[in-house]
Image 1 (cartoon, rainbow, N blue to C red):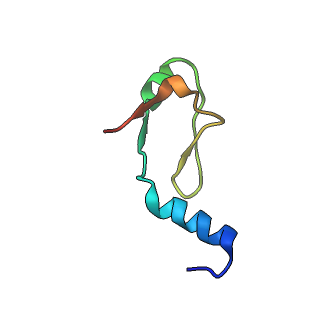
Image 2 (spheres, rainbow, N blue to C red):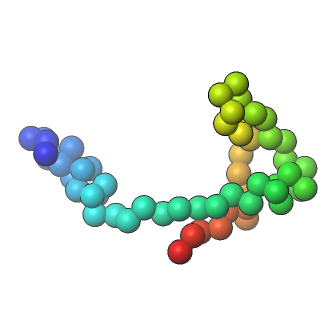
Length: 58
């Protein structure tokens, strides 16, 4: 752990919260006209992902 109060609080927040996983409805985005680009290393990119295209996993 850190010897500074601010860093300790930050680390505590990280350790206490559960991760949240979202699925991006990329197919729907593509059908709705959003552009996707494939980077040199194979990662798919887009400028933005509006909230209506996100689904929270349980």
